[in-house]
Image (tube, rainbow over all chains, first blue to last red; front, side):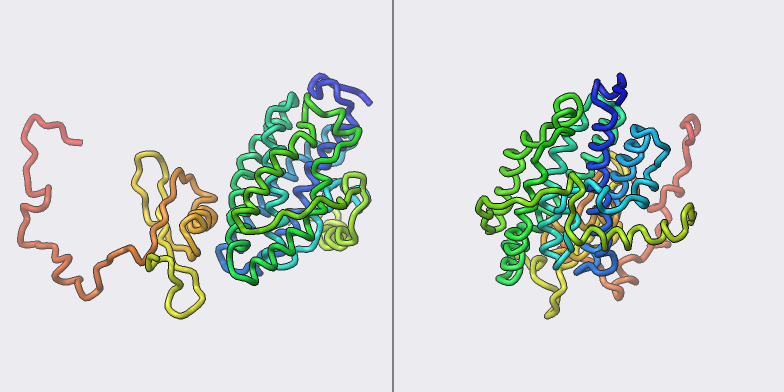
Length: 259
Length: 103
């Protein structure tokens, strides 16, 4: 592992791994959201969610391109997106879960957005200038994303009896997947401070933002309990394989295809 | 509750909002189109997504369509009569005095 000046002494391998996490979270979630395209509950929301999906895929493209450069093995963003199997994906399990109804999609999005905006805010001050630049641009988008998803959590939670019930169920079911956002391993410890915020440092702020919105939505924050983990290490739910199969089939059937 | 916050007709459609976008500081807000939304905040977000995402827009207004008072088609004659018989209402009627720079 060769440290470089740009990487502030962080081993290349750790930086590569970290960039994959950033890229994979956004690629997988962006692809999930794109499943709503043409199926949104109203035209305006169909457009809104497709826009968010495009933003996330754009962010993923930048993070994965940089990952490929850091890795130095000649893999570009397409190679990393289309020619890795589920076990090589480093996204948190939260983002690969099926969409469910619109309320569940919105809750998943809000839990992610509220975290993402904090992470990107910290990352835009990274000593790695290129990473900081990507994060700064993504941060602007994420601020809109969390506004959109947060406002919808409030309206659905504080909406009809049925929307309240559905969204509360989604919160209860998705909450156990949020622990991964704040768990740190060796990679996070190597990057902490010089490049990335410490995951655990984001949790109190995230919790405050999320619980405030849940209260305004008349929803009950779940009690502390079991948290799923493993996504960062390549241990995924059964849903990721299906998602990747659909996402990758064209590139794998026609390698190098251009359109 | 204002009329604009009530669903249209007896359907389950959200109220309609007119969207105005501003291309740059100081420019007028121009009508861009309309969106359906349950309330003002969502109307603003929908307007942003539909009309302000690709172009250079620095400001968006949303106005409940119900709040707009419009002339009716049958008004066309009397309301917009150009008064062609009153040429002095047009700036071209007046000669530019010598010594005034013409742009």
